[in-house]
Length: 286
Image 1 (cartoon, one colour):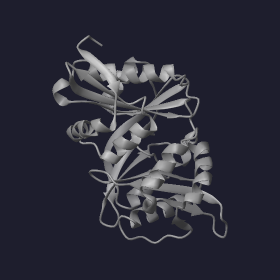
Image 2 (image 1 turned 90 degrees about the vertical axis):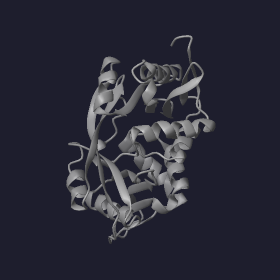
Image 3 (image 1 turned 90 degrees about the horizontal axis):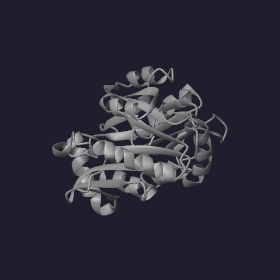
């Protein structure tokens, strides 16, 4: 960075600026999403200033300080093509290195992938954002999530995501408990799937949505969209990894909006079990 630019930690006071950048990009986040990212990683979220004016942001979420997730790499339209995006990404990666992170992941747009390729990121798999609408549905063996379920949900999530993201899942539940559900085996208290949802600027976002069985996954989806009748809904699903997701969301009228590429830097030590992941938590947090 030149002596005309300055990097500093992002605070809650910068959320308004973040929302301006998000609006210019057409993304779905609300102030609550920015606040969550800052609260989960206050030392890893940055604002870049040029000649005293904020020009861009980046966020970093650490999972067990071993896996890092980079998100919200945004530069104001009038300041693009000046290397600010690269400077922000470098700052996030430097932070990860100082924290001893073993692998960095992110979900890139096809356009952004060109930059990440040059920095040594590798493709893991493709994602697809689909959009649809909530509707009245029936379901069995699914109930609202309770706070006492979180320990079991977190333990199950580790085996599918690849590492603990306890603080994130607890925060998602605390913010929107009425949009969180668990699936159980018939006649058994064992949790075999879970679904979280939250409001967004343009649509409600469903995810993470994870299940051990396709039947349980579909019942969870029914519970999720049943809670949002008439509301616009987004899901970020895995392409050609989970064999059931695409046909399942098509059944309920969801159509493709855009694509992303999951990428990683370093050795992919935490691949998890993506074949059982139906929708991710979100491209800015995994």
